[in-house]
Length: 90
Image (tube, rainbow, N blue to C red; front, side, top):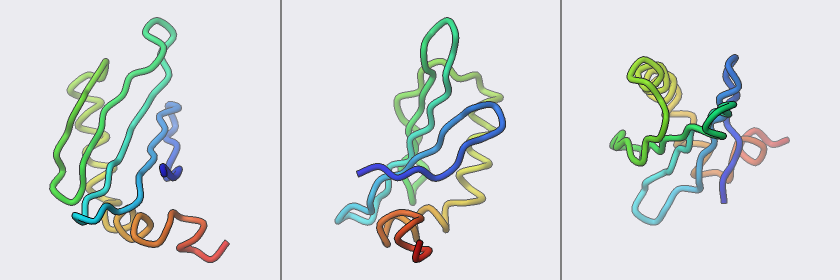
C-alpha cells in the first residue's frame, strides 16, 4: 500500500509504502511533465538508497534528497503506523 505524504509547490507528489518486514520503506517521488508525462525516482529508507531515476535533474534530486532527509523520521513513523491518517488519528 502507498500513502500520500507531501505535495510540493511544483506539483511533485511524495508517497510512501508500509514498513516492510526488513524495516525498509519505499518513498516514491513523481512530478508531472508536459513532454515526458511523469518524472520519477524511488528512495529506500532508512538507508537512503536512490533508485530508478527518470527525468529529474541533479538539482531536483538534491532538493528531493533534502526534503526526504528532513522528514525521514516522520515517513518512517507513518509507514510503521499505516500512513498519516492512521498515525494522526484522523
